Image (cartoon, protein in one colour):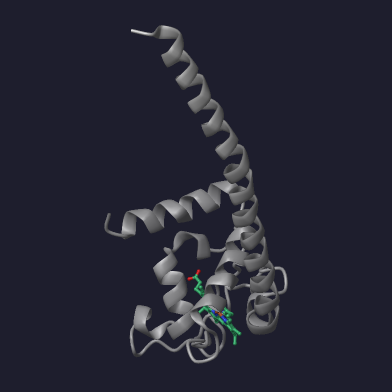
Length: 154
Ligand code: HEC
């Protein structure tokens, strides 16, 4: 047994691993953070064009959003933490944005929420939802992630 030899190999290996981490680690972290920020910025400008007229420039929704309008339809709810958007899974949020409320609430359900499937690409919808989520406090973000994980088969 040549103990110093093995020690030297171990030290060298650790040094190589450390160097690789230094090169790859922070760089990758930086890249994914930057692309997330880019996605959120894109989502915000799409939100302002497509969603803000009803859901509010600051995601505050329409006034008295829990009381039906004279025509029986519901006003647009807030997308901030005071609403219930964060109670829904990713699939539900994507589905409602793409298809409107009918597939979820029934064919006879009349709603002012438009279906955006023909107007926005999947990536654009994902970006808008990423922006909406980015405005929630940690607790609401964690709750929504948990709902999404519980709903999807592992
Ligand atoms: C013309 C008005 C209008 C526009 C524009 C609009 N919505 Fe809505 N949205 C509504 C209304 C009204 C509801 C509530 C419908 C109901 O309960 O019948 C709603 C509900 C929702 C819900 C369900 C929320 C919940 O808590 O259950 C989501 C998600 C949603 N909208 C996303 C979007 C997104 C994303 C956009 C932009 C791409 C958008 N909406 C644009 C009117 C609108």
